[in-house]
Image 1: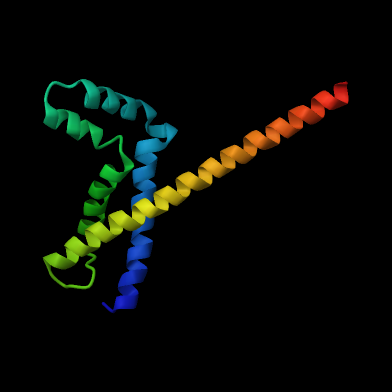
Image 2 (image 1 turned 90 degrees about the vertical axis):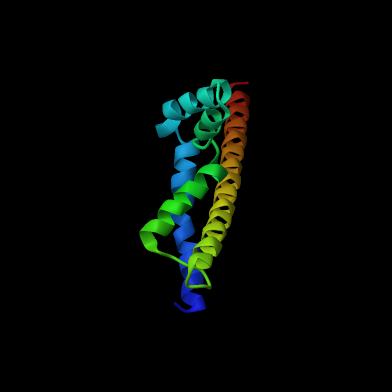
Length: 131
């Protein structure tokens, strides 16, 4: 595979990795299982058990496992055509996916801030009309 094609694969394959990782670790649909995992990650007796449950609460940690699954499904390798290509692809995909998730988090934060400011302006306008 040519380097340009590999880069396109890298940028595109990181999107579903980021999407799956973010959804499982942040969105409402997985709230109850995530809260259960948080409880176990803090209270279980054995360290290996706490770490295993923590995996489902951290988007960075979880993205590694989603990346491994993506590499198994797609057989994507970066730069080299042996195990080293998987190694490079894996960590590169995790990095790009986490950049995407960070940008998404910033975007969501900006949207929330804007909604709060709009609501504040509307409340001020409504109270001025009543006065």
